[in-house]
Amino acid sequence: MITEIKEYFSKGCGRCDRFATPDCSTRKWIAGLTKLRQLCLDAGLTETVKWGHPCYMFSGRNIAIIGAFRTDFRLSFFHAALMKDPEGVLEKQGPNTEYPDMLRFGHDESVAALEPVISAYLTEAKSYAEAKIKPPKSSRTVDLPDELIDALDADPELAEAFHRLTPGRQKSYAINLSGAKKPATRITRIAKFRNKILAGKGAMER
Image 1: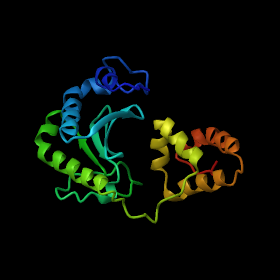
Image 2: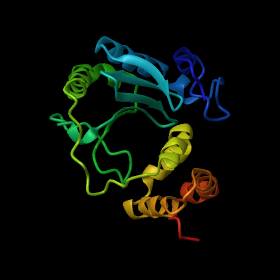
Image 3: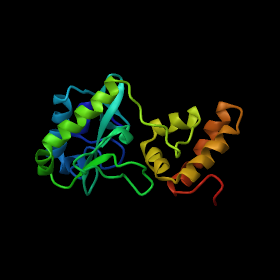
């Protein structure tokens, strides 16, 4: 994965073999992605790279992240439970996502059309970070072992698949891993669980 922000806008994220080729999704949506980037910078956010994507921060907290796919590109908000979404434009990432957290674009021109809304939502998200307001604890929240959190941070594909799991399946991995006394054992188990998580299965499913 990339570590320099300029690479994302010139080559892609580095997560697949389409990296630095004309077929990379970032090439298809470069005009819209560049506009989103400018809006985030204009909002006073700090630009960094996380999980191979442009991530924008304020007051030490992640605010939003940009992503490009074959069929669309997106601006996703962290701490989505706080967002009021008065325009009703936020969508859920998937059926198991608890709160709508992303703006999805199918045309480069869509970003300019939503510019006032995007700027207002970024300002709202900044205000929560500045005030150190956190989302209410969800009944669906699963406490994950540190080793699993580290693995998800280092492996975007795994993270995406894990967050698509039902809360029950996520909990099955948390319970299984927490049962191991040694960190090394938990790390070994995570490696063995990877394909199962990518397949959408729980820890005890075959």
